[in-house]
Image (cartoon, rainbow, N blue to C red; front, top):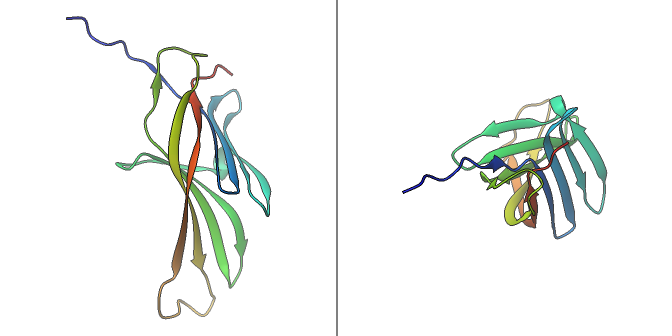
Length: 133
């Protein structure tokens, strides 16, 4: 019996759902980038502006969308499963992943009673591919 070949890890993700669209690329000549668009904003993030964590849930890619002192910090997290392809520039594969917008209440007076963090989850659909940059 012949073993499976290793496979190439996807490094370009193009996703959308509800009013959100996201493009995440890693392994480019300039590092990693995430472009986020919704009804209220268009933002681009690169390298140190992204927090990338490998977890049991998948790879979590988080960016800070806005910070308002003494009110809130809003982040967006893309949850990516492991995706392998047969070769670079192979046809993209269809994927469906969650995107989580998290609102963290902040105040200089310290935390108020009750819930401090609120989540909004959207299903993002699109493609993953192993691009050569």
